[in-house]
Length: 167
Image (cartoon, rainbow, N blue to C red; front, side, top):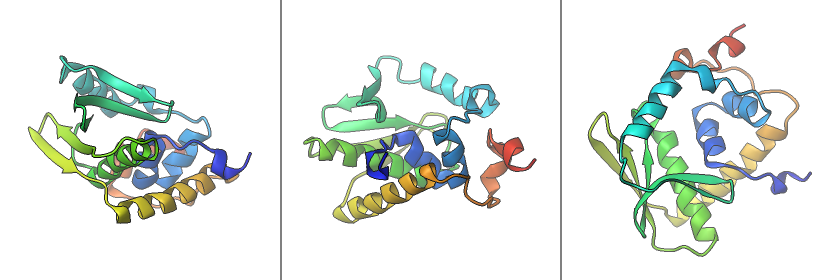
């Protein structure tokens, strides 16, 4: 399979920005998050907030929008701002993906219910070029025969893959 045929999901883009090694594990079927306490807390927050909204709108098995508040505003719910840059780019990817399929004039919002904060996100032409480059790199990483080299980050201690990386 050509790397251009690999469907990059929103989660893959998010993991790429958090940690390329985590992306590689996830894309190659090594999933350890189901038992991670922090992931479970995030699931509870997701389930208990914005309960009146039609949630988890999956499109093409590629993006999964937490909810759409209006026809022009997509929302993503996050527990904290710990990896805010990755969250911003994840929603930019959703906007990009939808634009590629003909949906224009959209904007995004990242909701942090525990912090009672919102971050508004738009997609620029420069962002689209950055995303094009990211997609090429993501496809390269996930098709590599081994995970990228370990680079220690502050977030590593809270990662579900910590034990695997540091064995």
